[in-house]
Length: 241
Image (cartoon, rainbow, N blue to C red; front, side):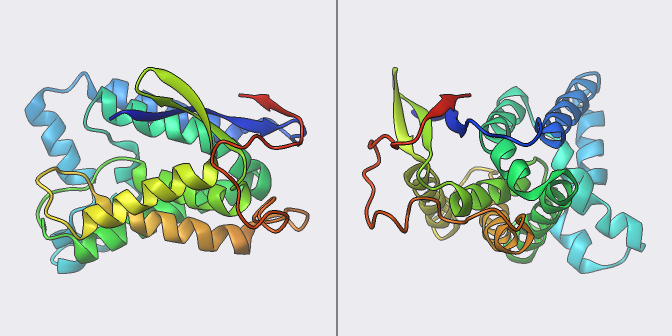
């Protein structure tokens, strides 16, 4: 991976600190640290019990809680340091602006719904029917979809090989989205849940339009300029986060 987002340019005005984003990051890290105490066999057993498994979710043969509770719990399990670190980095960068636009309670509900939608799409279309889905990336893809609707012209500071480059959020997220769609329709030997990313992203974009606070404007700056260069800096004052 040679393109790594590090931060974004946040607006100077913010209603409150992003408490829910902080809590989600803390909870994911805490669960991961707890998982480190397990043996490999025990961790595999936990993933199988609390991860979202397509055959179980849509196959029946289990009680309601056993089938559908993993649609929530899978979001807080991760398969290694790189997995949890990458997900939490994206949540840190994009989550606070989305939380500010939605409010704490609606943002928490939004996050869970995006994660559930991502899992359902994965379970519906994945060809690997017996492997459990784990990780927060479906929910975080929803956050990215909402951010694209909200602040497409904000700058994301991206590490490109060894240089940090400010690039418009619309280009960062659209390129990321194109990669997910391409992976869905191309042979892939990895265990990455591309379908969960697509499902979460689309859900997040839709929910942002429905859940945002009344004063929040979508597609900031897009109406003012038909085409915005990826490297053009915005005229308004922003502070790096």
